[in-house]
Image (cartoon, rainbow, N blue to C red; front, side):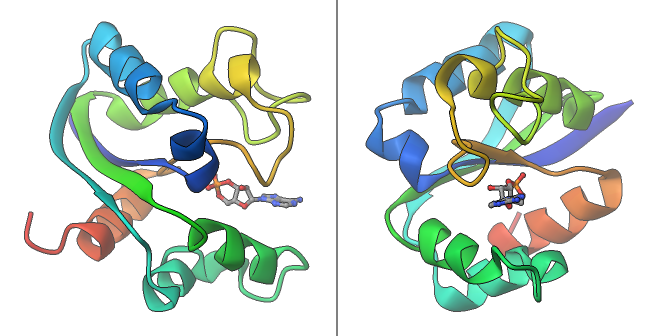
Length: 136
Ligand code: CMP
């Protein structure tokens, strides 16, 4: 079934020059990029995007981090795109969870600075895509 997912290259991924690496892995997998831009994230968008983490101990630093520099936001489409992108990205903790060969497994060290984001369900994908690309 064709799905769409939101993909972010977070400020650490952009800063480290990994935009091309991420795009390349998406394309090599056979997924299609249907929208993409480089932008600064407002406090408002950050808080809405991470609303489910409001109240957690790392919430404030998460907002500070995602608004600290430009991010690449993209909508990626394909069969089982949500799971496919999560496989490419690797688990949230780059050391304990992300497999070698995934983006986080290959390039990440810390859970907060885990380079990329992907929607975790069809419901999250719909909510996040509407938030980041309201005109799509
Ligand atoms: P992401 O998949 O974008 O969604 C939530 C983010 O919160 C996650 O990636 C991490 O960047 C961050 N995060 C999750 N758990 C922790 C944690 N224990 N400490 C710091 N940051 C976290």
